[in-house]
Every structure is written in structure tokens, then in C-alpha cells.
Length: 168
Image 1 (cartoon, rainbow, N blue to C red):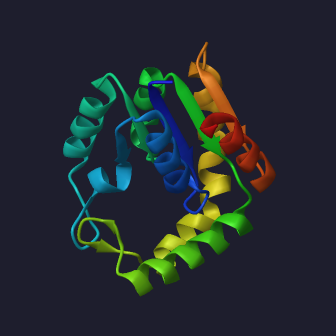
Image 2: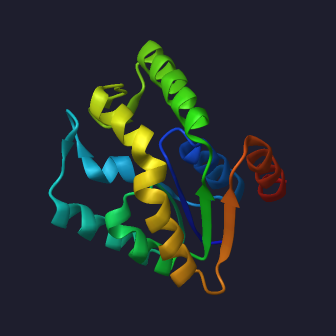
């Protein structure tokens, strides 16, 4: 396990799991939000995002946390392990709300210069994620998984079992 891709809806637990795996396996951790967003929640130019992610993928070892579908195919091609956190919408929404409160209280940032936010656009994205992105993610994974390790997690119990398996 040298190149681990963790994908899923916001609030599914990608960052939490990524941090645990990075600590356990001593792998560099990259959060896609840091590459997509400039301070003030301004999206960086698409070509810059793509170039930066391509450079990340070419590194010999990493954990990349984020779903950003525009570069999903490329990241899957490079990954040796794919973890898809496909938890229910209600779980993701609840976790996003808790994260928003915690991050606002503690002053944590999602990405440099980007405080946690809970606006209508983001809530709409979360609400529609399963309908809009799940079919595409599933199709891309089926087409490219080959001999890669694939973990699809659909419940909190499965997530705990995966953590137990990978972090012991």
C-alpha cells in the first residue's frame, strides 16, 4: 500500500481516515481541497489544478484524500489502493454539520485561507452527491480497478472494521 486514494461524499470520513493511514504507514498525505481552492474559496484555474494533481500522482508514495471527479480517472490509474467511503447521505450531512461547528469553534481551516462553510451551494452539492456522482464513481472504479485493492465502505460498522484491519 503505497498510493492510496480515498474518495467519497463530503462528511464521509475521508480526511479522518487519511490522517490515520498516513500516520500508520508513514505516507505523505495530500488533501485535494488544498489544490483546488485558493484563499477565500476561490477555485484555482483548472489547468493548474490538473497539473498539480498529475505531479502528485507521479510521486512514488502518497495518500490522496478527495473526490474531485475531473481527475478521478488519472488518480485511480496511479493508485494501488482505492477506498470509497459510500456512506448514507444522512451520515455525511450530520458529520458535515458537526465538522462545521468544530472547525468554526477551533478556527481550523479546510484549506489555506478557506474557513469551514455551510452555505446553500455546499448543502445542495452534498444532498445531490449520491445521485450525481455515485454512478460515475462506480463506473470508473469498475473499469479501472484491475488488480488494485478496493474497499467500498457503506456503513459506519464497515468503516470501523476497515480501520481495524488496516491500522493494526
